[in-house]
Length: 179
Image (cartoon, rainbow, N blue to C red; front, side, top):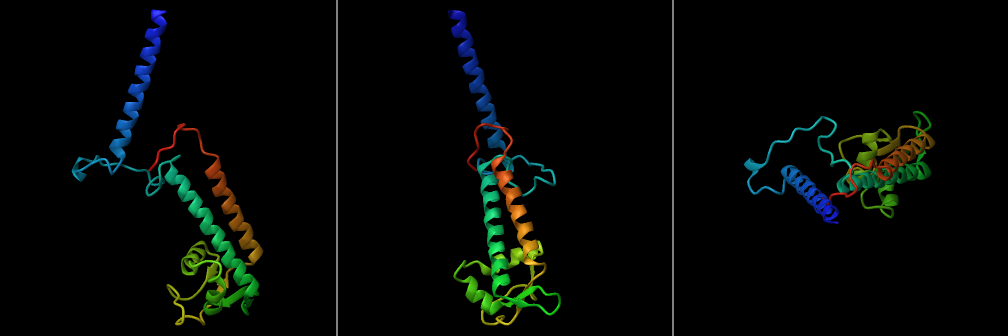
């Protein structure tokens, strides 16, 4: 019986030591654990990891959720342009002036400009200028760059991929870190 108790104690000591070592390693890369910046070790990142949350962390989950919400808002924006816009003379795609779009979208969300910039970044819409201002740019046309059904299919595929990334995480560790 004493040998069994010794192995139980030694396994608990080993588990404690492993958790202490994991914590020590985490604190070495945690930028908020150092009072002096010069004490903090310099981290090196692979190109793909730079500016991204650690894999499996809650920060990564929040990032994926935010990307899904942004894509859903872009889809709503494109749908609003499709429903309320006029046919463009250049290719039969829909176009809607910024002023009417602002009035329609104001009931949906207060983030129209950010959504427009995101949609332009992904190549879903186009408008002239860096940014648009209510009043000054009411006549600036905002146009879909492809047929709405094609845009909708692409956006929904991206949302599905992000949701798969969110739900199907590899089992690297059983406990997610709060960061």
